[in-house]
Image (cartoon, rainbow, N blue to C red; front, side, top):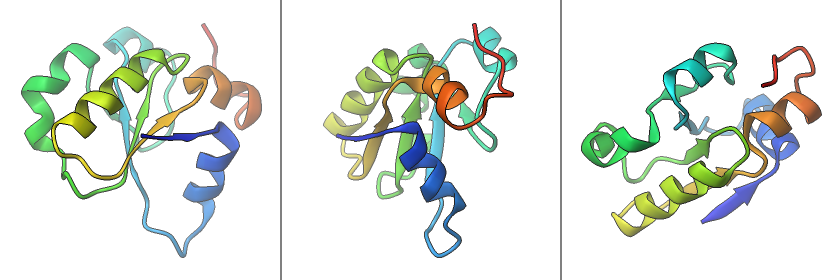
Length: 107
């Protein structure tokens, strides 16, 4: 599993020459409603095993949660199940709010 900082992910998303990753937000629905990174896909952690077939195993996937712990577990699960290009957003949406988007609500 790769680890991305919030500024690294922001740079990737801003670079029009690069294919955009799937932003997989694994937090609870209320957390996603509170704040999320634009274009992220909500898929609560506990639903990932049943919904993994919705994801392309060859796509670049960045797993996102509040601080990076749950998303690291999901990224590891995906890797064990044949996903080849999985990253974890270190520090989660909290780091994104602090380092990239200070207008994003924090909780």
